[in-house]
Amino acid sequence: MPDLPDYEKTHLSKLMVLRSADVDDSNPADFTVDIGDGSDFSHVKRIVLRSMFFTNLEYNINSKNNSMSITTDEAGFEGPFVVTVPVGQYNITTLLAAMKVALDATAGAVTFSSVAPVAPTYLLSVSISAGTFVFNETANSIYDTIGFVSFPQSALATQTTGAVVQLHGLTRIYVKSNELANANCHDSNENQPNTIAVIPVTAVFGSQNHYETNDDELTSINFEQKRGKGLKRIDIQLHDQNDLPLELNGAHVELVFKVYF
Image (cartoon, rainbow, N blue to C red; front, side):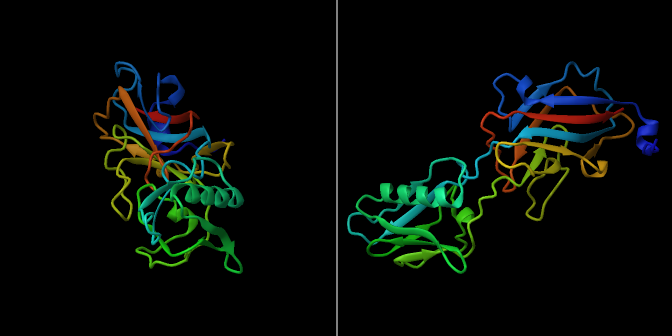
């Protein structure tokens, strides 16, 4: 039997399981769990996120990345028009078809002759039937997903992306908690301050993602060693790789912590 780490040899511990499904009317990406009067979790010296389970039901096109804005030179139909692609799980063929339908439906008499990747680069090309147009910067835009990287644009009959379409969807999750991990983490942009751990997402859409830590140092929080910390309520927020709240469409989350006293 392998030797236990020094911390486990010298400290009492217990498991703590937090499930979003156990919280009434909870948002699985932002929930708070009451764990009693604090007597069971007083004088906590260290807490480690051991594992996380959830079903990956975040669409690759969701409310965080499904908008475009266009301005045209068509008299009476200049815009700008906000174009919304329906939320859903897309492949390249279905996404480009949905984009064309949304563009044609939004801009009145203006229609688009083509929304398609162009060989050999397979960068996305969007062409208007007559005149010129530009894509404008807008909130919750689809531009990073489809490959538009430079703004403002020049008015052209055809706009071509600078990168290929990326439909991988969710790639990692930042597990956050103000109660457990206040000012625990900063990235290069000084974001993610209350992050406990960064969880890789390896499950395809519709499948269960199971993460189990192989290194406690990556998912542990240490508290003041003499008195420890009393835990009564634990808040959990789950953000995506862009630091935006997850949209799990009803899929619940289970987090397993090891708590040391």
